Length: 253
Length: 225
Image (tube, rainbow over the protein chains, first blue to last red):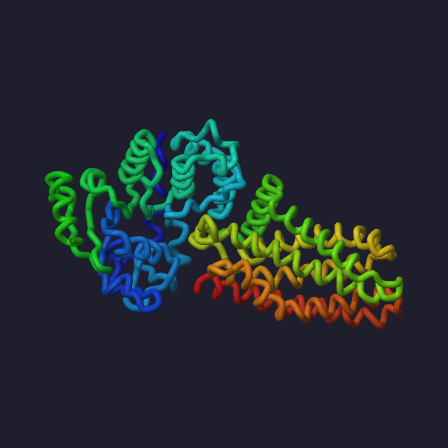
């Protein structure tokens, strides 16, 4: 089942802005440990960017900053031309986030979770119910819709988390290792879901460790090393996954 | 555009009630603690009737305060554990609506514990505790505790030592609420003229209003920090 085209994708962008996500000279330090160092990255409208990097390279921190869940020590982050976190309220309705954590209530059922989050996004009534049914079907959880999330496997909960992120038809999808815990069938389902979302014009930033997938699905790849972007390329420049793996080893080694 | 404030408040309250109806983990912890506490006090303070009358207010409010802390700790830890607070923070909603929604849920649970506690205490202490003014004191007292507690539990839920930190941080702030609630309750239960204790109830309502306003404003800074 297709996900409807985002209705408000244009409305979040200031007319003058060029890249949809513009990260300029961002530095972020936790205690005394610098996680991001003068990082600059641009993501265009409709791009699908895979962000690769070793553990602790700052990928998740970067994604949280783009989601408006934190403040950079230095530098600026603009989404649709709006500066975060100061103007985050202007873009929140257009962001969908799949995090390391599930962002779900374990004591609620799958349907109750989606209902709760749909209300937060001001979706209600028949439209919300239809959207919930469509997504439950799409992520293969329609038969478990009325079961509590605590009874789900990690993979099932992850699929529901993805449905939650897509619920309000965001223009930008931020995914932090969305393939964690998914079996092959569920991973293939997510591949299809992301390809579909991208084909509909959504901008996707996906943190992943899966080089084979990064070489195949996205339009662009960036590799983060020691808190900065060490390598970027378009998919057209990637001959195969082995080539990307070699570049990854070079810049992170 | 932001989701209307009261729609968010209602959604959060409804979600907390649904989750609690299914798991019963929060209320059962609070009720068991409150009943055990009451029982221990009743055994520890084997007092005559006058002494029981004088101590019952303190026993009731100490128990309600600690039971509230248990509930608040659990309620906000549940929001943090699976990153649900983050999920709410990236939604187009007013931060204060999260505060009010969580506050109402915590207030309701504390009120249920208080409502169970009073008849139980009446039996254990053999005292006439059922009074409409005591219900008013309970409403105001639990609201004040839940207000300041929701803000502080949101802060401490981000720390590793949250279980032990909340009581240490909360009790000094809860003191004006507990103190005025104890004074009002003592006046009500000892049959003093209403003008003697109504000032304490008014002061309790004032403390509630000040705490609510302060927490309402500060919540955004706490969650954005």
